[in-house]
Length: 279
Image (tube, rainbow, N blue to C red; front, side):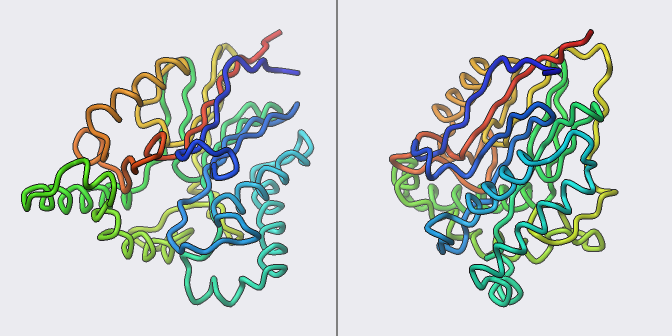
């Protein structure tokens, strides 16, 4: 193998591995982190959330790819398998009418053959201490809108503890989150953003990072780590500090969602650190 995996963690916000919408892939040719989109419909497919449903199909597809598979071919194979699943579970018409029903995911993939990292959506990359994000403007909009709403709730007398138990800020922005699904993979829209969802992806908008031959360590992570650090322990400590100081994630780190009572974190999280074995 051309790389050595040094640290791995994937943990769901609820502490239940079956409910974790993050998954990762480790093969001889690819390393990937998959972040299934948060369920905003409340519906399950084959007893799975749409994000988990999409993540499993993406994981299975990448695990079957050959070393020479290009970015374009990888996305094509994933989309083919998603479309097959949509037909199997009679989702096509429902997705056309209600875009937020579409199982979708963000993805970051290291290809050892091409010595590149491909980012589709907002998963994170770090190479020798330098972080490469791929954030979308919509997250800033919804995060700020929820933050404003929660500040108003607190001014009216609600406590942080009450809002952790019942996040009215999330309820306020939920229609915005549903609306943003109509902008998926729309490169002509001012709010358009890219995800893996069974439909065309504009390859010109995929973030491609060439890994230099002298690169030492690479980290792939989902956005469940708001402050990505060079080690798993440091990243976990930064997350713990955030959840202690700003559990609702509306001041220090403005997010569309915060910690919910009984959950372990505000989001699922995955961290994979590996070293390239240069000859």
